[in-house]
Structure formats: structure tokens, C-alpha cells
Length: 244
Image 1 (cartoon, rainbow, N blue to C red):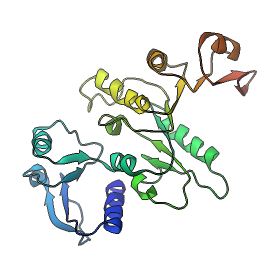
Image 2 (image 1 turned 120 degrees about the vertical axis):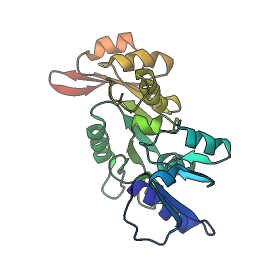
Image 3 (image 1 turned 60 degrees about the horizontal axis):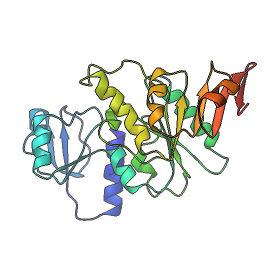
């Protein structure tokens, strides 16, 4: 996909002497000479000996093949994890069961000044690795999924979980695993925004300091008396209100 292509482009631009293997469960068209080996289908997960595997988000890492590879020293990573190892711009990150694409898109539009792009990235917008070394973007709003967050807890400048409902349980082994993946977004965040209308947000916010709180149901004066935060966003008489 485009995210893995962005990793390939970055590595080719910045490093020499690296050989690349393409491993894919599915046969995909090959129009490039970038790869020294190409393995499809049943061969794709056999005899893994590369130093690093950049995996698509939908690939679970707890399969025997990947466990064996990791035990033999292969690093399991992804384009998003690679970006966070190398990043030099602030990241405002959004996840959630619903509304995350809308929230990330709106945030990107609001943060983008005329000459200073703050693009959306990851699951919407640009591949994150394409922003490394970018002279244009002053930051990015990343829309991240539980698939990506299950494997690491990124260092982000702002973090928001829109809401939480039972989702992706055909992929996640349990609702607890899904919840833990979502919480990984805020563990290492510099500043956290919580949705007071969401049971999951209210449950986990006791563990972390809140930078901002928002609610479409609770008025500002009630929020401010009941919860500690630097900023409160509420609906007052049909208007979005900040700190009353």
C-alpha cells in the first residue's frame, strides 16, 4: 500500500546499501526493481530473516511465524512506528470507534494556516513517513486505528479518543485488547482531550491529567465544578463555548 511505499521511498532516499524484500499474502502487480526478493502467498511468511519487517496494520504479530522471526532478531515495525521513531514535527492524534476521520479532518483544516500546512495523515490523508524531513508541514493530525495502536504507544503532542463501542472483534481477540489498544494513544501523550459523553473516556480519565474536556450534554459550570482541566468545551444555547 501507499504507506509501505512511503517507507521504501524514505529509506532509498536517505540510506544506501539496503536490500529490500517484498512479502505479501496476495499476488500484487510488480512494476519496480526495488526488491531483491519477492515472495507471495504461502512463501510470504516463511524463513523470515530480514533485519526489519514493516507490516501492514491489519497483520497480527502474534502468529507463530512472526514470533519466531522476532526471537531470531527480526524487528517487527510499521510505517507509523517508524515515523514516530524519526519524527520532527508535532502530532495531534485521534482514534475512536466512530467519528475519528471527521474529527481529524476538521482539526487539520482548523490548524492549517494559509502558508503553514498541518495535514491529516495515517489512515486518512498522507502516509506518515512521507512527512519525515518535510519542509512544508508544521505538524500533522494523525487518524490512528486500534490495529496500529495495539503494538505501541506513540509520543504525541495531543491525543483524543472520540468514543468507544464494541468494534473490530473479528480481528481483536477480546474487547479488552481493543480497549487497551485505544488507551495506548493517550499513555505517552503530552496533552489529552477527553469526551465526557463517553463512558470509556470517563473511565480512563481518572488515570491521566486532562488538558481539555468536552461535552454536548453537560453545561460548563457543572463540568468545571466536577472535573479538573485547563479548558472546557460545552454547548451553551446552541453555541460551542470555551470555558463558559
